Amino acid sequence: MTFHEDTQVLRLHLLGMSRLSQRALDYSIKGYELGSPDFCNHAVSAEREIKKLYCQTKYLCLKLVIKGAKSPSDLRFVLAALRVTRALYKTHNAATRIAKTTLLLLANSPAAKYPVLNQFVALTNCLMRLCVVALFEKEISYAEMVVQNRQVCRQCEVIFDRLHRGTNRQMEAAELHALTITRSLGVVAKQTHEIADAILYWLKGTDNALVLDTGAMESQFLKSSPIARPRMSTRHTSLPFPFASCQSGSD
Image (tube, rainbow, N blue to C red):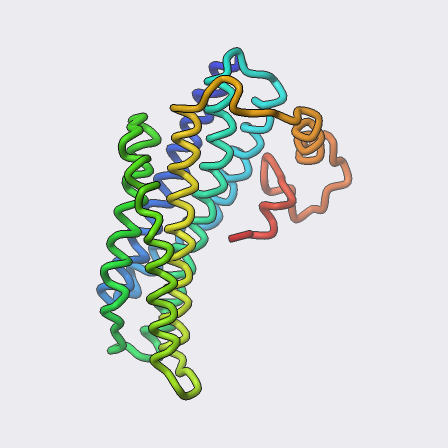
């Protein structure tokens, strides 16, 4: 395929990852707010699907870098797409952790509520929605709005400290679960800023803004390629574009 055709496939992959990540975040938040195990189970239903899509998208980005872009804006799009891909994968992982932790919270303390988290939950989900719209509508103003809300991460730290200081005794299971949810929301907030930064780099970057180490990129691409790794472990063979990092499930 041509470079243009590959970029169209890349856009479709990004759309798929955005859809899965946003859906997982929506379901996990609804599961927490409503105390619904059904929503939580829906949130974790696409873990295999997004992991496979993440590997395919990352492979395609590196392939396009090695193939070479015809213009600086094309190169910026590919590199921004690689950053967005990683951030969406981390967002999905954090969303599923929220859902799984909520299930534990409901099992141990069904009536436990932490109102201090409610505003932060809503704001984090709003930032994620802005990122998705900014990405596919090329709305610079939405990306800038997300970047200007960097205090969300600080708010997460404040909530975490408040919950932690509220217990002068050994923490109960419900309190530990609430802290885990807070941390996971902080991860999502951080990834929204990463996505927004990547979008701004793509849409506003200058031609000489990037110094690219093509040798390092090519080395990473060859290591990731199934052709360059004939002795790959059988546990990788289910993925059409295997990456060692995909097997680690990094957050």
